[in-house]
Amino acid sequence: MPDIIQLLPDSVANQIAAGEVVQRPASAVKELLENALDAGSSFIKLVVKDAGKTLIQIIDNGCGMSETDARMSFERHATSKIKKAEDLFAIRTMGFRGEALASIAAIAQVELRTKRIGDEIGVKIDIEASEIKSQEAFNCPEGTSISVKNLFFNVPARRNFLKSDTVELRHIIEEFQRVAIPNPQIAFSFHHNNTEIFNLPIGNLKQRLMAVFGSSYNNRLIPVEESTGIVVIKGYVVKPDFAKKTRGEQFFFLNKRFIKSSYLHHAVQSAFEQLLPSDSYASYFLMLDVNPKSIDINIHPTKTEVKFEDEKAIYAFLRSAIKKSLGQFNIAPSIDFNQEAHLYNMPVKPVDGVYKIPTIKVDPDYNPFNSSTASSTQPTEREMSNRANWEKMYSRHSNNQLEFEIKKEEENKETVFTDWDNELKESNLKSSYQLHNKYILSHIKTGFIIIDQQSAHERILYERILDNFERNKSSSQQELFPKTIELSTTDFTLMKELQSELYLLGFEINEFGKNTFVIHGVPADTLETDSVALLEQLLENYKLNLQELKLERRENLARSIARSTSIKSGKVLTQEEMNLIIDELFACRMPYSSPNGKPTITTFSSEELDKRFKK
Ligand code: ADP
Ligand code: MG
Image (tube, rainbow, N blue to C red; front, side):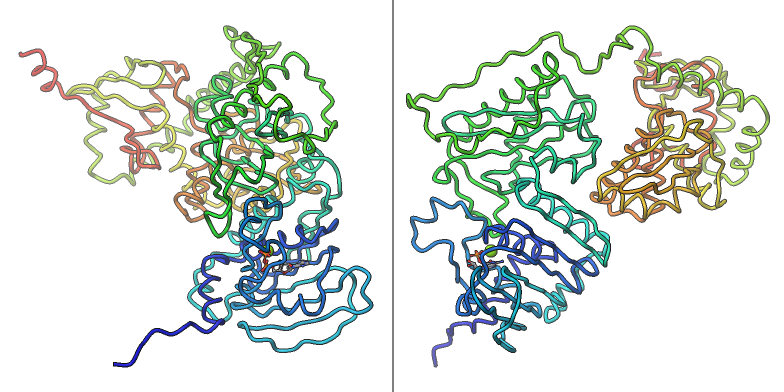
């Protein structure tokens, strides 16, 4: 028998490595942006076509490469960033594995143009599926430009697996932000299909955050700064009042590298303890600087997961630093936010060699949900106007319009549910009872039912919204004073996509300059009076459904709107309101569960009760 083991040809080995390093266009963007950072650039331009499927181009004004280096850069394990094993413990560059360019060139058509600072002439190399097509002297500006065309052209399985342009673009934006946020000393621009998505001038961290997420962040951010022997912490947390319902903006950067860490996330979340409603997440942008010796970033090819020494101590420092800032923010809200202190030059070991946990001074009485206009016992303005809205809704109910609507739906109702009609008609609905401000208890002919008020109302709204889609235009209530809503670039693009569907549902919103919309109207029966908050919540729910359930657009919108506009658990309901919910719930096509599949009703029969009392 002959021997059968062979070394793989480089092109095949590279293609296999690419499977790990380049999963989608966004991964190539990340690697190329990181190379531009490592090259010491002060300006980086990203140009993308068709969400990176056709073209990804990165132009920098960094150090550039010699002719030989340019050729070498496409070899596997070719890097200028480390030379020996010990260097692995002192990494300050983003790259060091020497795989990215080799991998990308194995699965795309790549054109590299580069010239070192001070050189007379540069070089241009064309490479496709790991094969050099041409190499020539070339007159180009100092720095480097890399174009990646037709990514995965020779890996159809990968290409076919790519998601829609919207989804892939969102991933690219995410990677771009992860590089741009911790590097405000570098100017960035980002163009997609000839539109400029970001233009980020050089500035400090706060200015960078505002350039990325919108100027409304100006008064949302609380600075966090702490420096100890093992870690320097610097950055911002978002005020608790602006917390999101979904894990939105949560950024940790370790030595300027974006990392994911559920452990450290927990530290932040616990620092916010009691300041956040239970279903909300803190938003934060935190830069941690540690001695590279104390971490291992080489545990994953994309380097987003990192192992730390001192993990427990960092947890404690982080938590206390944030608690301190939250406390201080209440006492001294006018700290100079623009002071970007030279924290990065701090010595890593304390002079006396002893690590000190920073002391905390927190105002124990501070509650961010109390504002001067509303104390916890008085109803807030929003509660008052909600109440007024409810009343409005009931006056509408008392004219015949709604009754007519219910009747019409009853006609379409499937026979399985007709029993309920009988049950309900013959029972005395006037005697509904609210339990714990969450459940509606009502007796029926053969026992009693308990209804979950929030799930039930979500079901009612959901079906109404789907019907409105069919009917094509539902009525809108005009805003007396149109409000503007400023969004992040991602949310803005998403809102633009949803605009026509939202219009069908009664949302009248128009584009108004960069990343901003004006809200002229909201659906007529909306109870929420803060239209900005309503739209923000709607987008959050929509994004969550998109990520977790991958719902089709109208279905997703119907669920998201039902979610954000429904009556919540905890709301006190009047007798009339309870009866209306019951009426409308049983007029639904599928009254038994919320759109997300949670039960809305549970029943107890009189026999069951009799049994319990041993009758
Ligand atoms: P790594 O970044 O891990 O070293 P890469 O494959 O990404 O590996 O890049 C290989 C080498 O090519 C780098 O080490 C660097 O010397 C050079 N290089 C890549 N991109 C650039 C760039 N934009 N400017 C200057 N040099 C670059
Ligand atoms: Mg690299």
